[in-house]
Length: 446
Image (cartoon, rainbow, N blue to C red):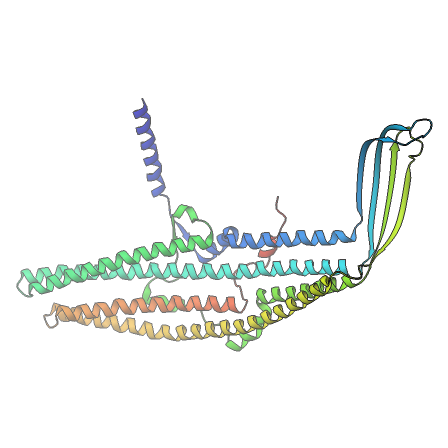
């Protein structure tokens, strides 16, 4: 009975695997991948939780403006010597106390402002993470499409060498060619099949990388990456224009980059922290009140209330206040230096990515021309071989040049798209992402 159950389980498992293996593929466009990443990428969830933490800290700081209320109760056995009519009894005490800060020379205000600016910095950090993740998705998506196109090139090369091997065998049997042509064709076919195998493995690796960035596996892996071009020869026609000049990008980048705004908010937070630290040099004015009631037969314990205005001034704190002020000033200088460093990095990123985009954009036409020439060269070599005027080496060289030129065109095309994506990220431009994306991420969660 146990064996029957085992085999039934095995059959059901195998059937489920078979059904899954025939799951219908879905088309995955770049926009689909970006939408999935915005929902599932863990980096964005981490940044969102950091914002919620900062919001909680703001709420804690703002509590300093509000009164503090507390209630308490106690029970004790109390003895008072020679008290009439009784000198010992169980005493039940209930109390209510309240305190309110009146003025503290900027301590609380500075603390609240510091946390508010820190919360804004956390929001800017989330916005920057959105830009970063979108770039990662584009890079992984373009890499996947590139590997997919290279698989097509490798498969086409295998097909050409299979045809050449078939032809070489026919010529050898007819006594037109020697056996070395057949052996050479078999060798080139074996190398082409090995390259096809590697290309397929590279494509799978690229898909895994894309899924890692997205944060999930679309349709349980049954999906295909969709290209915007129909054939490799038409790939140049789908290349988007270079819409931004370097001058325009350098002008808008510092204001667009969320990372720069994050540092601005952190600088404001450090300024507010400095006000808070300097407030420790001054007194604190507060009010306190309490009401106590007793349940006992002891006549000396009657209900009582008290209101107190309290002024406290720590005249000497062992130089703790001076240390806090020095620390906060140094933090302000550190953030200012980080801003300058980021400004330089933005300029470098924008300039480098724009130059790379221009370079690859100009190289597209050259690479496309090389493919056209390689096709003509291969056709000539193929015709010469058929006519007995050329040898196998000439055909192999032509085929190699053709495959190489196709690969160069594909790599140049996707390098151009990647450079545009990096250029947009460097300049703080995020096309295709809704403006309210970050706000939706910061909506209260159940």
